[in-house]
Length: 278
Image 1 (cartoon, rainbow, N blue to C red):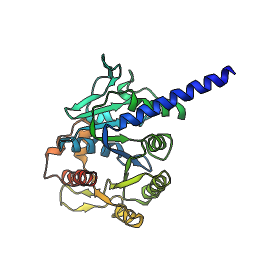
Image 2: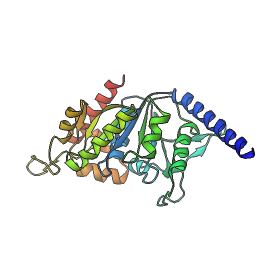
Image 3: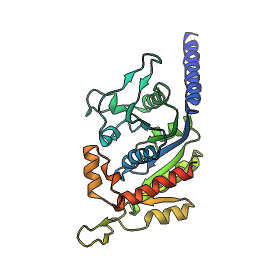
Image 4: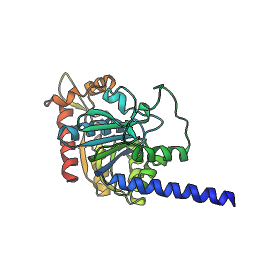
């Protein structure tokens, strides 16, 4: 009898939390899940820079890093400090990157940046819900969510608690990456998540000496996959050593270098995302 009452109490608490989450999500006009079929394709890079790009266009942006085992967003953006609590709402205050861009990551809650988060599914699901409900987000045009690679607990949780989320799937041109992307596409179909489009990253290296493109990981894989699946290829991004260096130092100075091929290609992706979500 006592166990039944405890189960009813926990169920009521979960239903209340889910209702509060649904109400909170009304503050975000667009929710975009940045995902990939496998690791190492630059998913977090795309999530971070797409958020900055949209913010620079004047949109209010929230960036939520739910890659709980391998958070990298704060370091890529050079964000310091930890999450503080609001005296009024008693909720956590996300870190400000720009006046119109807020960031939330598990790394900003950990005292040791190199600490391992050894968590199972139920705990991860609870943390993701808290990231939405217990954080004092501003009303935003965009909430971008950086998920770990694959189709596990984190993307499934987002699909369940944020049913109007659209996916941006990141890949590289080679077949081993595209095979996993097709799994991500099928995942989105199974959970009824609309796919905004694909981004092909590491699409060739422009030789600094002769200016020709070296196809390190094949070519056109993202375009062919998008065409076969009836999806939009949002754009292809070349390998750019300067982007790697700036990412390691937490800088986005490359965005102001309008003549850089990477900057041109990325700006086109940001424009497409903005147009497709109006």
